[in-house]
Structure formats: C-alpha cells, structure tokens
Amino acid sequence: MIKIVEADEALMKDAEKLIKAVFPWMDLSEKMSFWMFRNRRNPVARVMMRFDGVSELLSMYVALNPGSREVCGTTGFYTCIKDEAEAYWLSWFCVAPELRGQGIGKQLLEFSIEKAKTDGKKFLRLYTSDDENEAEAQGLYEKYGFKAVGEEKKEYYTLIYRELRL
Image (cartoon, rainbow, N blue to C red):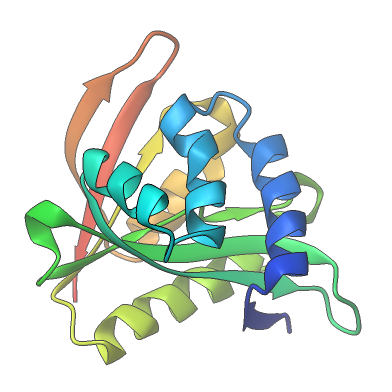
C-alpha cells in the first residue's frame, strides 16, 4: 500500500522530475505550473494563474513507495474561474511508467475523488490526451465513471476533457 502525502518543497522537486518524464510534450503554461504551485501566494504567480483561467492552485500530493520517500505517482487539485464553486480539476495525475499496473493509479484516483467529495464539490474534472503514454489512464478514468465531455485538437495529440459527477 502506497502512502499519499501533500508535497513539501523536496517532494515537489521529485514530483516535477516524474511529471516531466511522463509528460514530455508540456506546453509553456503547463511547464510553469510547478513554479506557480511553489509560489502560489506570490502576486506574479497569481496574475499568471488568472491569465490561464485558474482561480486557485490548491495542493499537490505524491504517492510514496512503502518505506521510502521515492515518489511513484502524483495528483493535485486546482480550481478554474469558470467553475470554481462546483468543481476541482485534477492536476498532474500520473504514475511512474515502470510501476504501472500495481494499483498506484487506482489508489491516487480514489484519494482524489474522496478529497473532492469531502470538500463539497459536485464534479471532479480533468484533461488528458490520446497520447499512447496515457492509454492506461483512459481505462482507469472510464472505470471510475469519468465521461468524455469534449476534445481539443493540438499539433501532435488531442486533449480529452473528462468529468465525474460526485
């Protein structure tokens, strides 16, 4: 059983390394999200978030391998200006490729769903892509009831927007 904890500065650096390896195609605003998470109280970061449609960067959580501080997965939450009262958006949900298939993603997703419910949200939303690196995640999202609600074509992939009614 993994341990899920809120990321401190050291764990955030390890989470960032994992996420950069899992999502090599990040756009500039996605790359900046880690700086914004670490500096979310900074006025410049807050302006950047608003420009991106984000009202609040809430928390980043990491899954740690039992008996160590090795980050093996991540999840986080943010709110968007357009739907902040009703929804959390899942941020940087991923599992280390070499550890997939061991239930880590399931535990992280269950944690995320429970957190959104506990905080009184009506929806948990996310965006993912049709990139082959995210194929296993698609099945997991569908198993937990996340419905595809929109798509957006990019140069090398298609973004898929999903939501779960809580």
